[in-house]
Image (tube, rainbow, N blue to C red; front, side):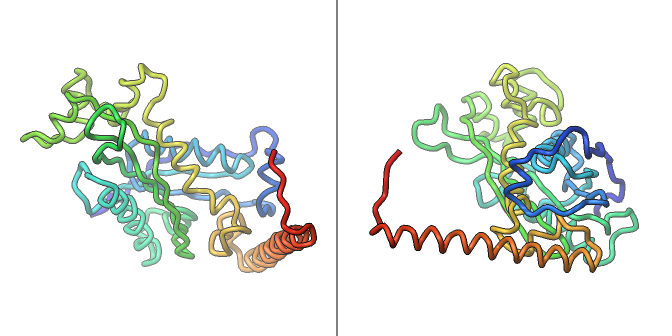
Length: 276
């Protein structure tokens, strides 16, 4: 059963000037209403990672980020990309289903975006300094349009002492193995294994931030990815939605016209290319 308690992290908004490069490259309308983003977990590391990513991608928006428990439907320690990605998508789907069914009485009906981060381990790639690597999958979804995006984090090899506990008879979760090897407590809710191995240069929150940003790209550039991703940047009132769709279509037409002009120019020049 899903917990009905929401954890509010922070509200951020119009502190400082908006980045002109972001506004120039994506559809922007006035944003009178704060957006509610649910993170499908109450782990503060995951909630903070989503918060930081949103603050970087949408610096001019007022956004409320909350953590909400959601089932992953996979083992506590997922193994492999397929299982890990399924865990992230299952968490998002569980919250989206609640929202579309009328909510659970805790205010999540107003949610504009659901994001999940699922950490996993799997066979290390060629050249890695170990047989297991650690990574995460991110899934983001607009629960009202069904628009979905996923992204994989970077990965790093796990040292043998951790691998032995993960693959041995104990079949530990990485967080528990980390605690056992390094003598820590609840490391999965702190700097994580990457924090310990990097001597604090990179912690678990920052490790996730870039993957969350990659998953958010369609909402940053809806004129390139499609109208289903445009709702987040538009006020959700019917009038604003119509205006936003018209604005989005106009930008899409301008973009396609630009592509056609470039193609026509290339044809006129005989297809010659120049290297720089």
